[in-house]
Length: 503
Image 1 (tube, rainbow, N blue to C red):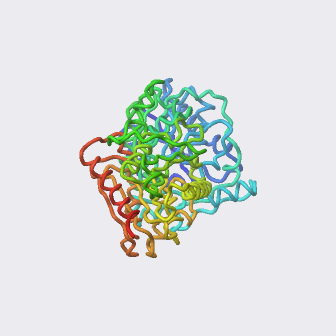
Image 2: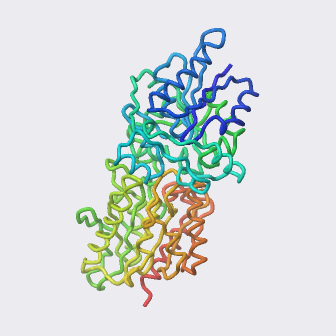
Image 3: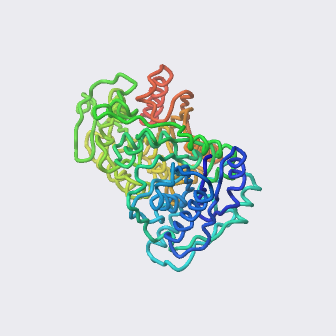
C-alpha cells in the first residue's frame, strides 16, 4: 500500500487537496494532508510533517519504506526537511511545481512575489505574516490557468497568512535524504517544463546534473500553479505513477556531447558564408567584405535570451544559431552583431537592458555602420528587453525583431517590472515595425505571452509582421532543418532588411 503525505504550499491548507486526496484513497493509497497552520519558523512546519509521516508508518502493520512525501511550492521545504529527519521511512520525495531545495537555503527564495521577497529580505521581520492574497491577486503567486471561478473563490476563501519566520529561517539538512528517489511535477502554464530542465542541464548546472540519476523522474501537467484545484484527478494519477517509479528521465550528457546536444549549439539551419569575426571587447562584428568600399552599412544587432548562467561556455555570442543570424545578415549586405549581456537571472533585466543600450551605442559609433539604420533582433528570454526599444523608439531604430520570444515575465518568475512588458507598450501604438518568428511547438506559458503581445499590437494598431513556423519548437534553428524552417528564417531576415533599407 502506497502512503502519501501531502504538504501544502503558500497560503493553502488541507481543503485544496480534498479531491486529489480522495482519488488517491479511492485507488487504495493511505493519505495524510498536513495542516501546517501558524508556526514560528520552518522547523515547526518540519515537525508537523515528521509527525504525519510517523502517524502513517506507526499506524500500520509491517515494516517498509513506503511514504511518498509531496511538497507544493513552499511545502517542498518542510517535506525535504522531514525526509532528512526520517529517511528510513520515505520512499520518494515529489516536488510539485517547486524548485530544488538545498541545505542553508531559506524558503524566501521560493516566494514568487518579488515585492514581498525584497521587503522581507530587507526588514528581516520574523514576527509578522504575509497576508493571504485577495481574489484578484493570485497571479502574483503563480499562474491561475485552469482554475474555474468556483475554484478561485475556494482558494481565496480557505487561504491563510504565511508566517514570516517560516520564510526567513534557513533549512538545515544533514544529507541523510540526499540519495532518496525524487520526482518533479511541473505545471507547464506556470512556466517550468521538462524541456526547461534539459536546457539547464546543457548549461552545465551541477544541481541539475544530479537529476540525471535513474531514480529521478519528471511529469508535466498542462495547467497552472494549483493543479490540486484545476486538475485534481490528473494530479493524483501523476502522483500514483511517481510512487511507482514512472515518469520521464533525463539522459546524462557525455562530456563531449554537449556541443551537439543543445539546439542553440548545433549547426545553423542555413548554409551561410564564413564571414570573419571581429572581436571588440564583449561585441563581435560580422562585416561584409566590401563594407569599406560601399560606405556605411545598416546593422542587425542580435540580442540573446536567457537567463544564461554566468559561467556558461561558450557564451551566447559564440552560439552557432546567433552567429548564423549575424552571418546571414552580413551575406545580405548588413553588418551582423552578436554580444554578451548580463541576463544571468530573471531579476537581471534592468542590468541586461543597460548592456544592450551600451552595445548599440558602440555599434552605432563604428564608422562602417550607418548609425541611422539599425535593427534589433531579440531571442527567447530576451523578449522582455524589447519593451524599452518599442517605447519612444528613436528614428534610427528601423525595426525590432524577435524569434520565439518570451514576451512577458512568466508567472513563476515573480518579476513585475512594468519596464519589461512589451504588450503594454504596443497597445498604445506608435511603435517601430516588429517582425515576429512564432513557433507552433511552444511551451504553453510562453505561447500565452506571445498571444497577449500580438493581441495588444493588433488592438493598438502597431505594425507587426508574423512569420509562423507551425511545426517548429523553441530554439528550432539547430533542431529543425526542414524547408519550412529554412524559409521562415530567410523570410524574417528579408523583412528586417527591407525595413533597414527603406528611405
